[in-house]
Length: 302
Image (cartoon, rainbow, N blue to C red; front, side, top):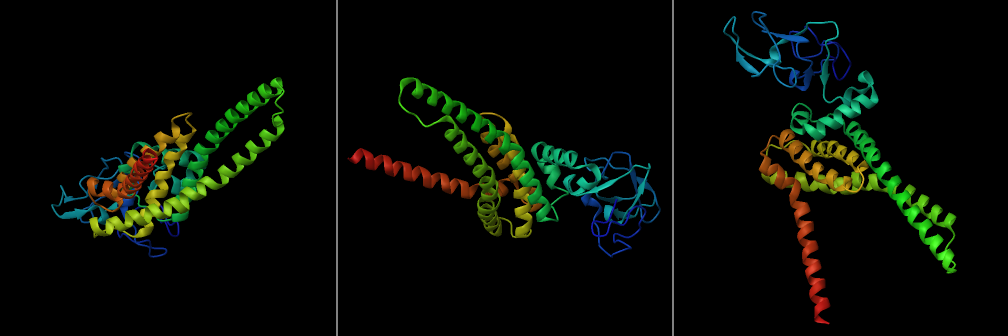
């Protein structure tokens, strides 16, 4: 259980601030393996044990069974019960240097996909760069296989068209030229798409969500917290590696993950979080339908 600023070991401390650097820490932002630590009453040292998904006592505040005094988790001393006891602050991704890059990425990905509320509840994220790094890795993990598969299909189709045209004497473009164009297209897509989604689309979407929260959730957190939630929701783009339907699944799953993240981080209701996330998408959809109807009407008038 290390200080997130200086790395000092925080076990067995009676005050919630690091003796080394003075950083105030919150036990609720840590998670522990079940049975690896105990939490002790600050008045009588009665031990308690974690019973939720974070390995923390529930409820967080209660009357001590031994001395009867009111205590809160933040006042309690955390004592390791075995040599390998570890308190993880934030997500596995924040601790990848300790547990390994791919394990940290996989654990964080599965948490955002399958347990988004549990992931965001103790973890708003302290570093935008860390969240951005996770989003980039996840997007490339899904987009590169999808782009390769699409490129192979297009190359195969180009080879078929070239062969058919050659057999018919039509003088089609040579196959190497088509292959080169496919490679250029692939490289351009790989370099361009993630940057556009993370910075252009992501920036606009973050501002739209934060603007809606200004009305819907007056006690909202900062803009940076919203952007970090959005960046972690891009983990769903790893599902783009699934052939044919991966892009549709990843986008829908991102919406679900993002709503859960906004709800937990900004401590608002699911309905308000949904409205904050979806209002811009709904506006684009209505504008698109209006444009399509207008064009259809114009075509019929001729």
